[in-house]
Image (cartoon, rainbow, N blue to C red; front, side):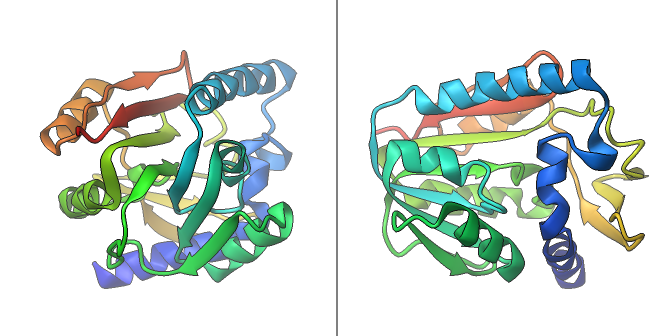
Length: 228
């Protein structure tokens, strides 16, 4: 398991310079104008839900990557603490945002434990990379990191993603995928596609008041609370 998780960190460090191409549907992820319009429309649904909330004093973002969602979080938060295992991702995020609202910590997200409680915890396209055997302990750490009444928000992928064929993504069975970077390097990573109802139950069993929702094609997301 240790080797797998390190391999996954290595993959995202290597992918950092091209990660935004995936989200913005550029290069080999470009499936045409109609696809891109639909993708952007559905991303807008999630973004609107995220921003439709009272201001938060201190937000914890786990696996912030290149800052696509960090950029939104600084619109609703006075401070953001961003945790990522990849120094390459942190460097891109920091250069892109150049915000004194954000502080960065390079750390293993599976070993990290909060020393304080936050008003909100957010993660984007991260939960699907948490191995099943580590899900319970990860969600426990998230629960402990939230203040009572604190907000949990996440977004992730639905199984259907028509860009996968062009990006040479191959399902290997179980929780595993093989990903190929634009330079041809291959990595095996964890990628779990959750049924929304099943994931809702897992989260509620973990103590959260929450419901997982979907956009028409591309995203699952959830906006909930740690009970007071």
